Length: 127
Image (tube, rainbow, N blue to C red; front, side, top):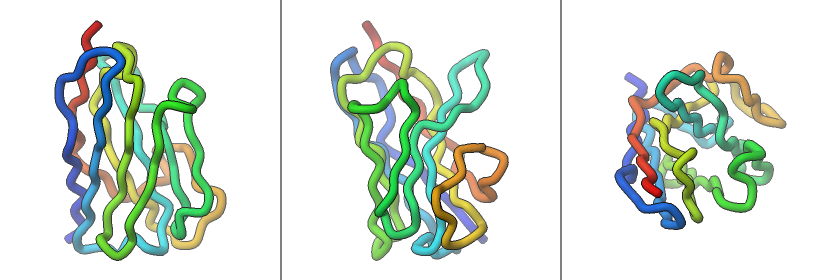
């Protein structure tokens, strides 16, 4: 059974930082694109960042460029999202996702192409 479990969310003041962690089990993520997505209340789920299987290529939503960094440790079967200079508009539930297809470059940014999802971790940024 494939499981993606996110952690590291919580309340933070504007300008602060959080590091999200996504641990996978039942699925070896080393060959797959991984993505972080977020969904705020009343809004559609949107891509935040993606990373290719080897970690060479990353992509970011314009709204987080320069503030967020996605990385991965394939030995630990884990993906991270370092979030700095957080803003109230970053408030959302953050989900990690794994692509079922292997070796895809560049990584897709559509949530519909990712086959495995975590339950999410809440990030709340206060002003």
